[in-house]
Image 1 (cartoon, rainbow, N blue to C red):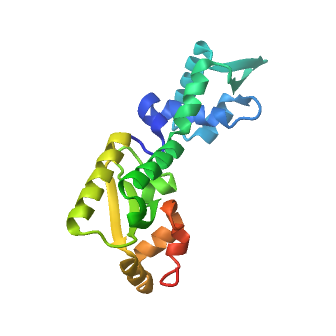
Image 2 (image 1 turned 45 degrees about the vertical axis):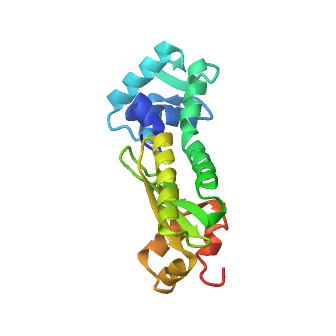
Image 3 (image 1 turned 90 degrees about the vertical axis):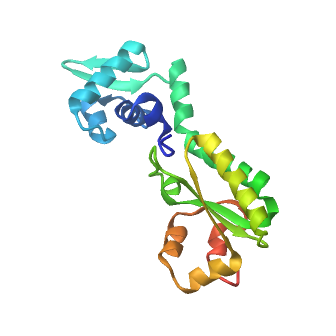
Length: 207
């Protein structure tokens, strides 16, 4: 699934882009204006999508002479479905946090999402990247079991593979001391899921 834009997966990227632009309108806009802000390559494609949405009643059109202006019909039952699709990335993050609580629990000092999903740039083939900082390092068998169960549940939730980066606090502090590129990426992108806030963990050994 496209983790950052699930609507691309279900209704097609161009249609989703037009609907996203419509959802941000505070007043009617011309087809050209919608196109310019939508990211769709072809004006003809944007216009065809708008015409389809008008026929379905999802979009209202007003004519002003030779020009048309469009706005979403937020009372349409399908508009509620589209709004739900747009909210899925936030729901994914909430569900992953619940998974971490249930599969890792207090064995982790803190957990966080990072990478393309955290940046809002994850595509259909992207992994869901999760940082796990152990509170006390589990035995190899325990660690394998917890990480396997976590990966399986994330795969079940999204259809995408999980990339779990599990390290001890000491290993994290060593990466911080070496100022590795990963630490820069984590400081820029990571959002906490459970436990100690990731920004605090990334301050180093005094955290």
